[in-house]
Length: 495
Image (cartoon, rainbow, N blue to C red; front, side, top):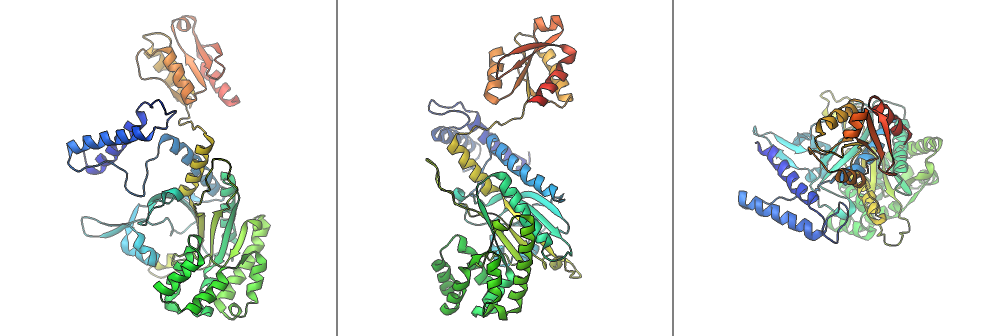
């Protein structure tokens, strides 16, 4: 077996051994106690050690295994996100997980140090994709990306994570696509019911104009921008210290920047910045302010202006942004008893990157683009923590019907029934045993949340009927064999 296939199967076997182990007396449901998990991991590691010295099965730092319960929650989140993208006319696409290193290095600038580098047999330098941006169309893309940074698991920050992107590429009138991207953000965050949220907006031309009028040397623009981008994680005094001590910015210049980055508000702040003695003298900043004013007009028409804040501290550190930038954050709400405050940072972000596609066009054709990314891992972390607090159970399958028998030697009849159900598009299961006990089958249905059971036995076979049992009420009714699929479809449509 090739190594690429062997390692995932070993990891799967290790995880499966933990999930299938019976719970100890102090555990309930699908969650195992730490001592059992530790024991299972230790056992698997000892076996691996016997096969190959020093081979330890574990998830790499900054990654995680997802259990069936996790996958149910994640798929619901992704379904909502993707349905919103499709509602706005986006086409789906996918790309390779790795790209040429030189392509990504030029694309991300200072952040290229966070990429994972690879080298193929021919010596070609590659990197795992850092994000999902750069394609020419109105499209969405859902996939895993990788960043070589220190993971913060308690904030939903991983080295390997899922990213959902929506982008609009093409020459259009100003701010119409940008406003739609912000509308999409609002629809997704409202639909996920994560609580109150705010979307911060700014413009890279305003940021660069602010740096220029404050006296930042042009050669330091990107480095200082990277520092400002940390204001959602660090206090101003710490960001100022980094700019002055580590990046050599004059203290008085840093103080001037500080006067601006503490400003945030709505369209009235945009008007105020038009009158600012310094910013009003900078052409770039005026262009950015003009676009933001138009953007707020469209946001008002979309009915979402109250969710948007013009925030001069927003910088978005990636080099390729050229215009409007935005970032969505959840607003802290008073925690209920037993809940811990969740601080996960931004849950969605994006902006305009008009020069990026042209970097890879031999003729340098400019293709204006604007897009957004949804932070699935952080959203998943929030939902997961809330479910733990509330003690919510997650059903891990969508099975609608279970095929059971109370007697021996009915495997063939069960196989016929389940084939009919599958062929009719009904989600069905049965136990992989010749002669399972009826109580075992019914208990499985109750524990997994399967709503209906069809029962075939000697009496049913003799009378030409099938019993349909409601798991919730335990009521049973006999239906003619030829009509049982139609009866089940009727019940499922009514439920």
